[in-house]
Length: 405
Image 1: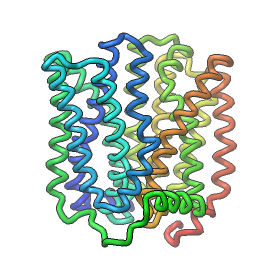
Image 2: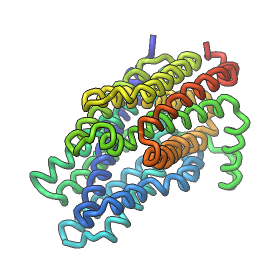
Image 3: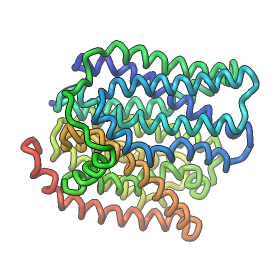
Image 4: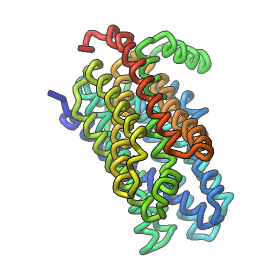
């Protein structure tokens, strides 16, 4: 029987802060994208803004991962909420006083990227300090549900406020979301503290984190599964506008429906992981089965010749890729030593971001040449092979923990 994270008092007190933080973050991302289009009417600039919110994490996440191992991650999240609320407040005030320009937007988007780079390692480091080992799958799964629900609800709230009031009010509401999260986090006293230890130089700690992952066969296996996940279902979700256009000649309305189905699949995937027990063997099997199903969906995507057929395929892909991502994150939590947690999870987060980005570039380029059906059929077939080969090496992870069975 699984142990619910919501049965843990500390997690139950933290959870509302996570909800408001996620809603504020997705509202702000939506507003930046909308503002980029309103200012430029250029898809390229919308892409630049999105890139500015991602690029800093590739460089800064490992740095903040080291900090997450040094400080109380709750304090890190409090600083993150102040930083994000300030970004949203500046956006709102710039709108009110007519100072909002493309330059303003680019600076705020880059600041958002820096903020997210620090927020993720701190959040990942805090969760295991709120629950016991048995409740970790539940905590990670619930966090994934919150994140994916906010991905749908946050932009919807932002669009609604834009339609009835204006952009300034939407930015200020996002600032309020972060402020509420800040107030909740401030009440969680006595959580996240660590015994003081000698601190090595940053570069030395970073190298130690890399060496720890490299010499840990179980972590290498988890990272490999994360890469395969990024190259399978995650890539299709990122390429959804192009997939919809090429497979069913879909319009913006069809894309909205597909995005909603993807969000629903992600929520269900997080729920499934949240119901699992903290057993390495069970979680690893869950990841492998999810990836095989996702790969087979890619192989059979040629059968999704209608909107509703593609909706079913996309929802299954979103479900399986979320199960794999949250399952891999849980396995990392269960496998890593506490002293390395922040560094290892920040490296895992970078891999989880880079793999779908690289897959989107490669598969998108090949699809322009061979078409999506051919490329995704080959990708799905290779995915089945890779997952089978990786799962055959499962003893590398299972032999390292007495709780694996």
